Length: 170
Length: 78
Image (cartoon, rainbow over all chains, first blue to last red; front, side, top):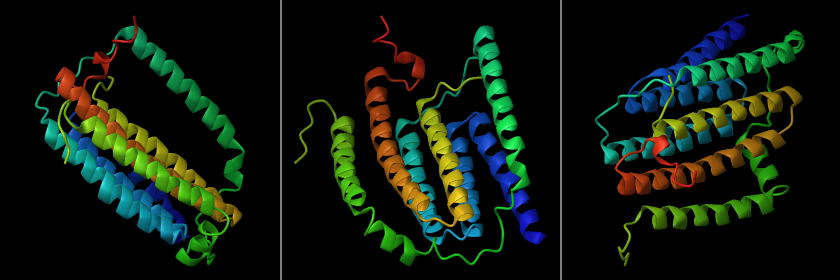
């Protein structure tokens, strides 16, 4: 089945890119790998027929937020990227915590793998703009309006935080 | 090896939010239900707001401390 092969390739590529975000030394490289991860996740959304979310993910995440991150990195102009190693006890604690989380996830996912055929050739229309728009403006219209208040609060907060101490904005 | 850079920390938070989003979309496709995709949409909205406020906090911290090392933020500890 070719769809499953494509999904396996996409999944491993996404995991590799996400690992490179964490492992690469320089922050600019992390941003570039994060953009690659978002593009791969967008392709997964397209494979699951979630067209609206694929477009929004591409425009909002890979477009807007990542440009914001790169812009702040350029603004701060960090030259030194020397990172000291963590202490032995912290490394041991992180290893034990991560290992136990991995074990718990493996045991939880062991039985569900029988069902796993999420990448079928589906012709469902729930991911379309029309269906999601109907849902968004009927059932979730209050939450949608509340997000505009959240955005205004975030905008005012960002401007107030980032301006200088006694700078007057006209 | 740990990350001390605050921008990398914010990027890792974005990565975790994307993992949750991907899981929600998968379940939404699996159960043929559109509500989870609306939830993912709201998660993206909140992530955008969080990134703006977080980055402005980083800029303010860089102005005051001339560093974005996360270990510099322990003034409230004592």
